[in-house]
Image (tube, rainbow, N blue to C red; front, side, top):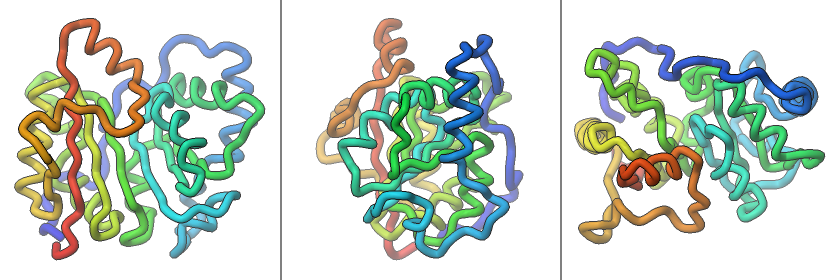
Length: 235
């Protein structure tokens, strides 16, 4: 793993916590469904993440900042052998996903509604097969770049919890953040960018359902980028 950097151990990488007033069914879902799925960081992290899930699963995937949950929801049924952990501190996004679940509480899903760095620090070493970070807040003003989620300290966190050969996927429509991520992963050393052609970064991931953020970017004429990095086994 790359040496640690003198950045803050935790920081608010997300913006506001609430948006519009929740509808009654959304508030009800937050009160009744979220407690069933929320990971309790006051408990000791298990060595085998499988005990966190009601259904038997073979691999474990973390999505940080799932927004309205479009990607997460699309893959819960498509990949029943995968235990998904979704993190979203924005209350309205969490409420949207919970409402979309309806009466169904998937046995291969767990959630966390606060700072993702807290969850990353709680997880055991080399426990995840993949981490997804799709359309994170780009913090476009230069003075706010320190709040971008991709930094050397968080890449240290990713490198610790990913299994050797595990995957880190990053999607964004902000070219400066795409370049930022490529440079930070290159400089970190534990991640190798996987690109099989010159324009592979333009190709959405397999079974990609799209997201509302992506739809907005396309409407406004911005080109999304889809990056895939592999955790080097020798770092």
